[in-house]
Length: 371
Image (cartoon, rainbow, N blue to C red; front, side):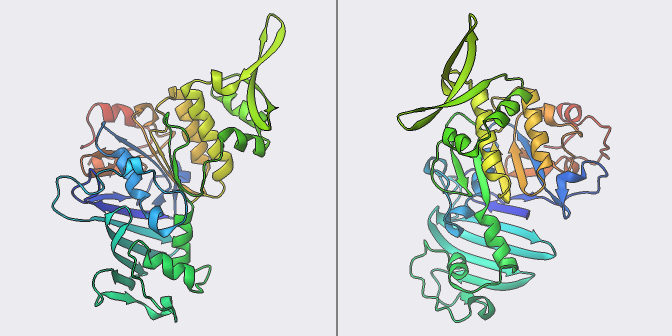
């Protein structure tokens, strides 16, 4: 799990931004934390403070440590902060796997241009590799073994190179970190199609994924739980599976392509459903940007409740919907407020004691939390 994340000089984050996932001692909603770490987070903030940028920053690691789908290039413009004289962006991840702590830090000049990587395992520095200083290219012998490290191309990560080319134990903290990164998933709940990063590759059609799953009836029930009553069926047209919505007209059964009648909100629910059946049993970390941009507040609540039941992966949702600031859905240590270059949990945003009976939304609207 990610215990803490830092980013500096990346896009809108000129100064160091730190997101601390340390959980607090609350007796309610214990399923939202795991091993003392926030497992289900919701991030709030005004427009332009960097909520989307936070997700892009968190998933920068996918680009060089994994072979999974990379962040789309349109989200990587102005990679280095425009107001800074510092020529690189810095990223730092603190991972916790049971009793093991793994810290991974790196610097980049652009999305594909590594300058330096450092890796600590339980306070022991095992990689300190500067791509442009041969006097600072340390790799712990126990990690590298007999591998000859002759990297000339700094678009190839030394950390990934070692992982791919040495016999590392499957249960080692290093392996757990790499597998965690391999199974991170980011996607946008907006109207730009199935835009995602991490976890898998390719752009399989959503309709085809539903067909292959055989879960068309379950999808109907999912829509019904969100007050959408559809009767669905598949037909095949020129070898292509087409999802049809069936309706009654003057006592006669008619059908039309589902995609032609589904609203933007319905399509956002469809996207969530497809990811839930194809990925949620395998992923390690989920980030959904503006997950409820097209949802009624009841649908947004349903999605949060569904995610809260999924204990096997860590997740972050970004939202403007303060209705979700309820202790039946979240906790003061799982709900974060983002301002310019700062992100803080509600717990750490006030000196007042917050109890389960408190109305977090009302407190937020009335300015009880420091921003």
